[in-house]
Image (cartoon, rainbow, N blue to C red):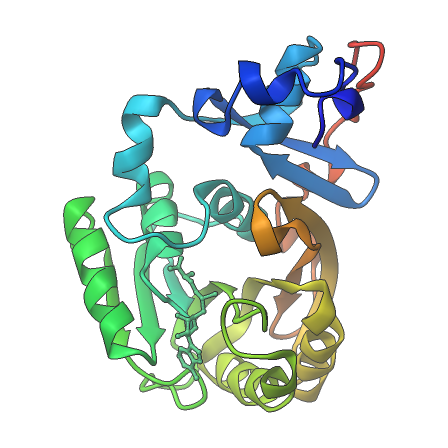
Length: 269
Ligand SMILES: C[S@@+](CC[C@H](N)C(=O)[O-])C[C@H]1O[C@@H](n2cnc3c(N)ncnc32)[C@H](O)[C@@H]1O
């Protein structure tokens, strides 16, 4: 976001403020779109806007929050976990766990049990390091496994929360055409009846995800659109909320979709 777009003279934000100076990660809901990120925080705070929902962070906790190995941004993890309305003690599955950053971010906030599977053994090892560094290994574990063939019994999981390979940094949109249907069939098998999920993908794979959900007989309840800053992630993303069985909206927390919209120009909400 350029300075001018924030109501400041062009170029002022770059020299004055950097992402590392942000002390809040702000979620702003604009219609059906949710925007987050340190740059949004910087811009909003610069023009005196307060946002409806913020996730506190600080420079001192940032490095610790992130873990030794980089993964999904904790603000996006917060959005997925909030939308999934996680309840204490639930078993939460991430079938595409990567370096465990999503699971670690969820485990810090919601007292559930977390299980992840990851195909790449190097990432499994990195996830272990991340979870140990955060002292979360009692709550969360990542094992080597294939999302298309999960080593779990039928009806054994309460909630699925995951960011799928978008086809940007991981895999390809073409590969997602076969990966998503196979993985969502497994999700449908291991979720207990009435179980639910919130999964993220890029806009370019969203239709593939929708069709994989209906092919697996999972009910798509609603979809949140969001964007978060930085490089290829500037492109839009979707977080899809779904359920095994009838899709009751009350299974999910819609606060991110329903947050009050702030007027960027007037500075009042
Ligand atoms: C978007 S990344 C997940 C990042 C993760 N949420 C984190 O915070 O570290 C997707 C991951 O899915 C993994 N993956 C791809 N195909 C898979 C499969 N069939 N089964 C399990 N994992 C797979 C990739 O290796 C990659 O690490």
